[in-house]
Length: 295
Image (tube, rainbow, N blue to C red; front, side, top):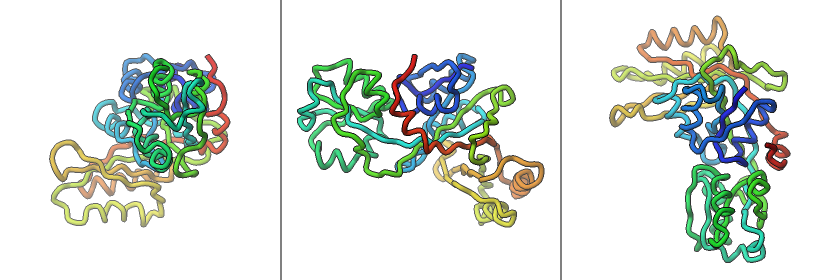
């Protein structure tokens, strides 16, 4: 099993990949699209990519790429607790309050807004492709009076010191990661620790149907199917054209969900199943994100 993840080494994506595929060989990629392209090109068997953060919402890059570029089925989900640290080169650890530049992923910067505003309000913000890439940037340029916002995996990987721990604004911060692949049969996950199943649908509404969204939701409601998420995204075909991503707390069966799909299609909606997959709530993964990265 070859597993791709958003790199470089030391990201929360790597922690998620190791939690789901502890035995597989791991390959880091610089961007989310590169991870999914690697699956399509058979460089790896499966990719683990972030889909949603509890504080910042959906990772639109992942959603849009799955919809518009690489149509790879989702075969699993793992939720990782997120703890952000302020990382700095060891020789500057005692003077972290004098930092002039902060590097991190846009989501991580937003998750630590209160800390930055209170302690480093004048620092320049630099966005990177991942939190680990920010840590690498600081480690590779020790002369820069900068700090990275990342996890302890990145600190250990790049030899940085944690100047301030747990600088995120909210304690209940988690990120959902999904596993995508080309071959759902060969790499389908069926492990005992999975908590529940979920099915993700993409629904497009007929443009000339008044009350179509209400009809869509009713198809789930009268079957007593619980929706854990509904989100609109632009179809990229013009202003006002949207599709909906709907997460259903139910595995694909032979009656209920096929009935929903048939009813929606009868209404003139377009329906595409993005995946029906097991979900793991990684409450114990804090230790995973604090352990050394193994080669």
